[in-house]
Image 1 (cartoon, one colour):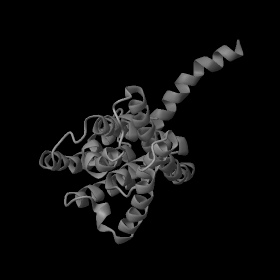
Image 2 (image 1 turned 45 degrees about the vertical axis):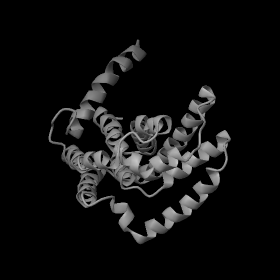
Image 3 (image 1 turned 90 degrees about the vertical axis):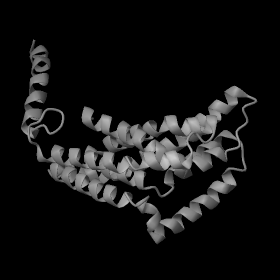
Image 4 (image 1 turned 180 degrees about the vertical axis):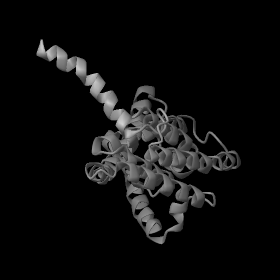
Length: 244
């Protein structure tokens, strides 16, 4: 995976962390973990977090099926441009709040997931913690949808899955700390920080558009031909060694 995509995935996850505190923080605080047994507390917290990241990776793999199809058809640069445009559109909508919450069908799905989460939160075994994280990952969330849109440009199943796993790791510090310390930021401070997130998304959308345009800018918008030449250069020494 390209370095730019790796940085984008982790950066997007980190920027989404403040949003996660508001959306998923209450669920994390409802886990009812006891700090009396420190090792068990941290392991259950980790199990919950890995459940979320597992779902993100799974969703990324599903999106990657589409991305791989476009890559095989030779439309990778167009899907990168399209992803950038969609990211910008979603970022503009998110200035008024989480756009996902404005769609009725998503709200209905949210209610069903919350009902199942309520049942799991009453249990304290590791499998329940993991499943809580898994269901948490399916909660309708504008930031996750943005990440999935960005992962489409990764160009393949495992690439998109990796992108979403890195996105999940980016949110990890905030969500782990939410369970560990409780509500880290009050609502007023969090809302002020959240206003910066759409700006980050606009920049990321612009980066994906530049990437698709192949303007010859190193790391940001490399030409496809240049990448092919570089790969050929890297493979030539190996082929010479094989001949000898």
